[in-house]
Length: 178
Image 1 (tube, rainbow, N blue to C red):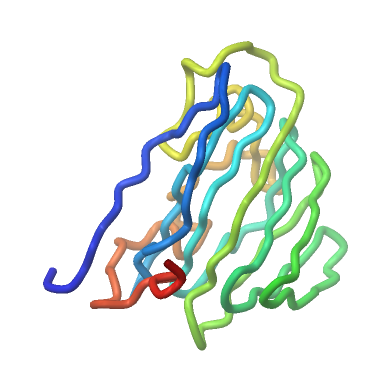
Image 2: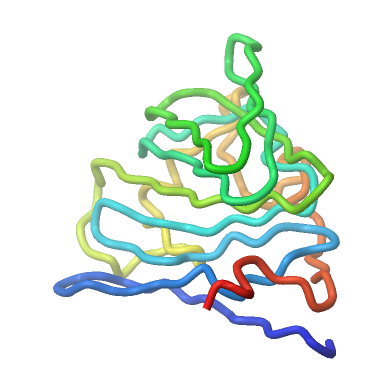
């Protein structure tokens, strides 16, 4: 694609020293999602998520981690287990303790760009068994839909993440912040 700089992010592992990461030049989308690893340590992981629309549309929970979403661009409507909803906008966030059921949907006026920070008590040690988005697999295995089915990120009922990624030509998050 002309004018598109795609930066593939691989898990950036901090085992015995610090690691640096950047959000700059993250491509924006016409369709689909981005779920990129930024940094992973044994009990803490940071990801960047971008949604063209949709979101995590099925009620689910994470039994293996506490996590937070911090909105950097756009806004999302979060729905919690008891049916309560809350719009979360730019420079706001939501903290979800383990086992809290939730889902969210992006406002389609602009891409939703969020930091996702997670941490938890692990059943395994080390960082040899990570997902492509940098979260330890023993943590992800404890994620389930509200009906008890193990959650798979690209499941159709999960919404936008099941759609093919289409980049927005020449559009990037934090492109002019150098």
